[in-house]
Structure formats: structure tokens, C-alpha cells
Image 1 (cartoon, rainbow, N blue to C red):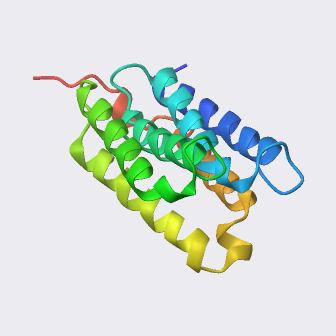
Image 2: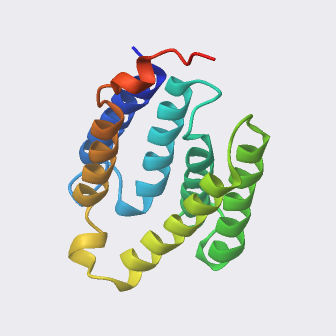
Length: 160
């Protein structure tokens, strides 16, 4: 199995984990969604190897999720939410940049999208952006995309 397909399989498993673990009638409250998603990304990144495309988003989103878990109802308390989450995202970004072949764009895009989805979950239509089903579906769609067959052109050796 190719690294891309291994990433896809891990993302599909991550989607199942989100659907089984996160939600009102599930073991974990919605605030744990970023950490569960980050762990799914870490699993997919590891499945793709050190040169994988997901290390940037994996470390940033895991940092974000850890920051939320430490503050909202966690041991550090909600008053420290902003500095702890910002620091955790920064730690994830720094760690991501230490991984070979991680692009700054993948790290920056992960920070941007984490902020956008966080904003939408707080201020957008809550029935959409606070639904683990939406995030599980996004992970599943990404996993399905990664599982697609390789194109014939990519299987051809490049001749000089």
C-alpha cells in the first residue's frame, strides 16, 4: 500500500473515532474534537512516513486540541484559554517545522483553518459547526480522496 493510501486509511479510521467518541451522547464532549482530530492527523502522518504531507496540520491541530483540553474544564482553567491555546498552537507549529519536508504553508494553513473552524463553532450556525458528524464527514472525504488510485502518469518512470 502506498503512503498516500495508508494516510487515507488512517484518516478514515480517524473519522470513525470522531463519530464514536465525540458528541453529546458520546464519551467525549465537543471540546475534545480538536484533540481527537489532531490525533487522527498524527496517526495519518505517521502512516505516511516522515516525508508525509500531514505533519504540519497534525502537530498544529494536536497542539490546539491539547490547549483546549488543558483550559476548558481542564487543570489550567478557562481564564488562561487564549495564552495557553496560542502557546500550544505555537509549539505544534515549531515542532512541525522541525520535520523534514514540512512546508510553512501547510503549517500556516492549519493555523488559519483551526481558527476559522473555531470561530464558526462559536459564532456560526451551531447545528452545523458544533456537529461531530460534519468533522467526521470532512475527515472521511479527505481519507477517500487519499485512497484514490494513482494516475497512470505518476506510475511512469521519468526518462531523461
